[in-house]
Structures are given as C-alpha cells and as structure tokens.
Image (cartoon, rainbow, N blue to C red; front, side):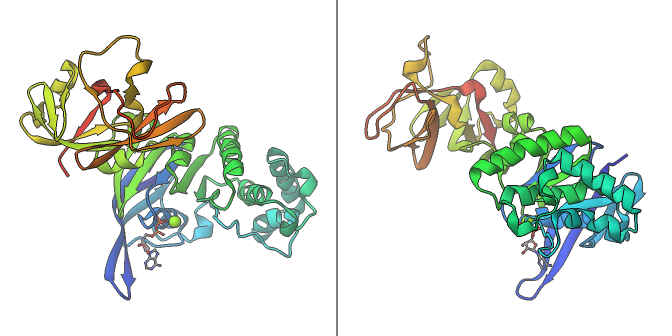
Length: 361
Ligand code: ADP
Ligand code: MG
C-alpha cells in the first residue's frame, strides 16, 4: 500500500528577516494508494515544502508523516521508497542517458542484469530507446524531462514526487507531456504527488487536488467538485480560467441586490443559502455562466443586464468580454459564434442557477 498521510504536520522556518515563519500549517490529509494528487497554489504557499517533507529532504517541525503504514518522521530520504522528479530535471551532463537512468540502481548495488532490464523497460515506456547513448545536451527539453521521469521509474518506488516538472517546457510541449504523464499514471498504477502553480495543469492531471494558500490547505477535492463547489473565495478565485467573478450584494428574500442590479435567486438555491438571508454576501458567478442573450432560444424573465462592454479578447473558439458592475470588473466567456463589440451596450443573461454565495470580503 502506498498511501501518504500527514497528521497535523507543520513546518516552521527560521528566517533572518521575518523571524519564525510557518511555511505549512497543520496539514492533515491522506493521499490514497494509486492516486494522482496535485498540490496547487500561488508561489510561496508551501507546495514544495510539503513535497520535500514527504521526500525527507525537509523535516517537519511537528506532526507525523506516514508512507504506507509506516511512520517516516525520522527516516532518511533513501529509506522512504520514493522517487522525486525536479523542475530542472537534475540530470548528470557528463553521463549518457543510459548512465543517468542507471545511476540510482547502481548506487543501490543492484545486479547489472536487473539494471539493464529496468532501464530498457523504462526507455520503452517513455520512447527513449534510440536516445540511450546520447548525452543530456543532445536531447530536447521534452526528452530530458522524460529521462528524469525514467530515472524515477526504474527505481519502482512506492510514491512518485513531481515538483513543477513541466514549467521549463514551452506551452505546446507542456500539453503533450501532460497527456504522457496521465497515461504513465494509468500504466504504472502508482501513487503520484505532483506540485504545480498552474491550475489548468492541476485540473487536467489530478484525480484529486489540494489547494493551498499561505501555508494552509483550503480544500481537497476532485477537479469537478472544486469547480462546482469551491469552499471559499480563494478556491473560487483560483480555479477556472478565467476564475470566478465576485460582486458585493445583499440577499433579501428571493433577490440579491447589488450596486446596479437586482438578481433573482432560483428557489432551490434559497434553501442552500438560508443562513445568508437578510445579510451582506459576495455573489460568485463564473465567466461561462454569463451568456449573450442572442444565443438563448428562450427569453429569460429575469437576470438580464445591459452593461457597456469595455474590452473584448479573442481566444479563437471563444472570447472574453469585460465590463463593470459597480466597482468590480466582470469577465464573461462567450462562444465565438456570438461576437460582441467593445464600447457597445450588450444584453447579457446571468445564469443564477450556477451562482455561489460567500461571506462578504
Ligand atoms: P511553493 O513551492 O508553494 O512556491 P515553498 O514551499 O517553496 O513554496 O515555500 C513556502 C515558503 O517557505 C516561502 O515563503 C519560502 O520563502 C519559505 N521557505 C522555503 N524554504 C525555506 C528555507 N529553507 N528557509 C526559509 N524559508 C523557506
Ligand atoms: Mg515550489
């Protein structure tokens, strides 16, 4: 079993300028066997520190870490049965690809026949067979990335740890490697812990996602749940592209009153948000839940607004439309079949069936 479990794990750093500083606060979670768990959050939120604590490269200040059913609090990195793939790949430039991939097993004094067999197998899985006698500098970025993964695979670890492994690749290659990593996960049936600051990468790769901010875990859920039911404004504002819009308002009866509009709230939503009745709220609406009225076949009775469009950004199959409600800039994502011009008034429908309410900021 290759579970990873954190029980009330914190990490405090001694910083010369700031004094004591908590990089990870009371992290408590279980990464299940064979799960592809992605840690996502802005730079400095504690993702790498969390991963390094699993690897044993950083010792937690308090709490317990389990790998499988074993407490590894004091275990040396090499005794944890993990393999880590770093952002810069950390390949040895003077060694061939074959030597790079063999290195870890040689250090473990494994027999040559076993090493050869494992390297051949990993090279086959990663389509590196024809490159084994080259040096890293003779490989493209994507190929080097695969070698770094290959080096981890040959060790057949309980858990794979990836720290932003795609961030040095160009956009097209990143998409391709994302697909390869997903396939690799299925093929190996391994537990993978993967760190990224890129929410699209997190959403496409993760079977579940840990969203972190300032050392604290905000939510742990499947991509679908994070998108549909974000627990707080941080998660809502981080997940989705572009992320959710926020408008201040007040829930009064079956309406939300904002600076400029009265939105009608569907019946089933009123019971969900009973606790907010008569209170200030922040209304969350995703860009894809604001529709161009022209694209609707049935004219809605409510929740039509008519803002002046400020900016239009073309993305090919869709485009982003910016306007204001009160002081907030709102973005809507439209299908390119329904074009809109900047500096014109446009009738838009806000789909309140998909709204989310949060405590006021
Ligand atoms: P992320 O990977 O999410 O960008 P990190 O885990 O690398 O974030 O860092 C979290 C916080 O801890 C940052 O503020 C960083 O500056 C701080 N930090 C990381 N490592 C050390 C260290 N060795 N000493 C002091 N502070 C550190
Ligand atoms: Mg990092």
